[in-house]
Structure formats: C-alpha cells, structure tokens
Length: 352
Ligand code: SAH
Image 1 (cartoon, protein in one colour):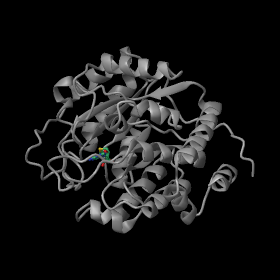
Image 2 (cartoon, protein in one colour):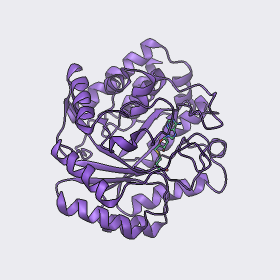
Image 3 (cartoon, helix red, strand yellow):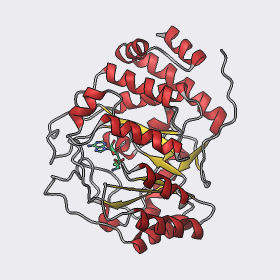
C-alpha cells in the first residue's frame, strides 16, 4: 500500500487495477497517510484558506428522472418551486454582503430557464458584482446554450459525471439519459471555455471498487478544475429508498486520492458529507478538500430542494449558515476566504 501511495505521489497517476487495490485494501493507516499527504500538498498550494461558494438552489422542477434523486420528475410528493429572477438576485445581494464572491446557481433541468432568461440573470449578476464568479450547475444543455451562457458571463460549470462506467450509468439513469451525452456535455463545457467541475456520488447503488477506480482514472484524464464528490444518501420517494448511504470514511479516502492526482484541483467538502456525519465537512477538509458551499437559498424553499433525506442546513438563514461554517473551519485551523477562489495554477513540484 505504501508503494502505491509513493507511486501516486510521484506520478500523479495509477493504473485502474492499482486504484482498485488501494480502495479494496484500505485501512486506517493507509487513510491517515493519504490524508496527511493530501493535506500537506493542499496547504502548500492554498495555505489555510478554504474557498466558499454561495449556493442558490433556483428550482426543483426537473425533466429528468434520475433514480437516486429526490427531485426526479416522477416524484409526486415533491412540492415544486422556482425562484424568480428578483429572488435569485436578492439571494446574491445578501450573499455579497456576507462576503461571498462566487455564486452557484443550481437546479433541476427546468425548461423555464431558457438561455434568454439565464442570460438576463447572469448579466445582471456580473454587472452588479464584477468581482464575483458565477457558476452554473443546471445539468445537460445543448452546446450552443453552454456557449451563450458563457458569453453572458458565466465563469464555471458543475456537471457531475455521476459514474465513469457506462453500465453503471444506465443503472442510475433511465432512458433517454445516457453516458455518452453526459460525457459530451462535459467536453462541450471545456470547449466553451468554462472552468469545469465533474464529480460523483460515493456509495451509489451498484457502485463497486472498479467503477470508483474508473472515476479516478476519468478525473486523471479529463483533468477538471473542480470535482464534487459526496456520499449517496437514499431518498424515501425513490426506488433506492432502502439502499445504504455512502460513508464519510470512503468519501474522505477518495478526496485524499483526488487531491494527490490533481494537487491544484478545487475540491468541495459537501453538504451530503455533513449529512452522513455531523463532523463530515471538517473531516473532508482535513482529508484534502478546500472548498465549502454554504446555502444562500431563501429559507422558505430550502426544505423543498431535497435531493436526499435529512439534508442539513435547511432551517438556517444564509448568515447563520456562513457563521456556522466559519466557526467549524476556524476550529480546525482554517479561514474562510473572501475571494473568487479560482484554481491556482502555480506549478507544483512533481518529483518524477
Ligand atoms: N440538475 C443538475 C444539478 C443536480 S443536483 C445536474 O444534473 O447537474 C447536484 C448533484 O446532487 C447531482 O449531480 C448528484 O450527484 C447529487 N445527488 C442527487 N441525488 C442525490 C442523493 N440521493 N444523494 C447524494 N447526492 C445526490
């Protein structure tokens, strides 16, 4: 195991079988060595600053029917909402006051948000706050749409690949969704000039150490600017309601590996991680993550953006959410950063 870790540090790459072995044969000692290495290199690049992004959940209306997701189209129990342009801009104004310099607009694939509607919102945000980055996380769109929104000023796009294994993808998504379209979207986003984030759930149904190894290889090859990973958590109104949740332990282990593959990558410690373990977000940071994404959505809709059961932070105001995370980060010796939080591209030492 120590040899694998040495190789990973030296080459920033392992074979798929080696990633698989690292996962299958992991133990506490391997995890703590990996976490220490990941944290060390993250500190060298990012210091004690944790980047923050203000998350605005703009709609839970979705035309897709992903088997794992609480806001899937066929969930009749989901009470739907959509924020208006003005509500979104109000969330951003409040976030700006609180020190956020990146706003993430996330939502289901809601046909109401046409290119025109989004161009207007993005344009307004960029002109009010030229010092801020706007990130979109609105799922699959045509090539031309990605380009238009980029021209309107969007800087970054998060689109989790969900799994890098075609058969596994099929078990998580019904037709007409497809692995090929997902991958094509990710490449289009890069071509359109976004800083791109991919990612996956840890412990999703039918996931194996081999599919995870393929996720790691995909990250190595695609070389995203960001990677969002968090545990899968079942939602009561989905067919995966009785499946076990992913663990904090495995998520942290994978965060460390990803940090060692891509030392500069932006790696959030997610709300889902904080949901499976009360200290999950702190543990994620200590395993090599360097981003947190507190919620800026109006409290009135928070409970409705329920991708999985028992999601945390659905009752607090934005300021409380930020304050709570700030305290949590300070306790582990980190500071919340007040800047856009772009990826640092400074050369890191690769001892080949
Ligand atoms: N519609 C957008 C945003 C999706 S929500 C898109 O397609 O990108 C953001 C992420 O939440 C998803 O990519 C998925 O990985 C995660 N998610 C959905 N359901 C989940 C669940 N039950 N447990 C954990 N994460 C989940």
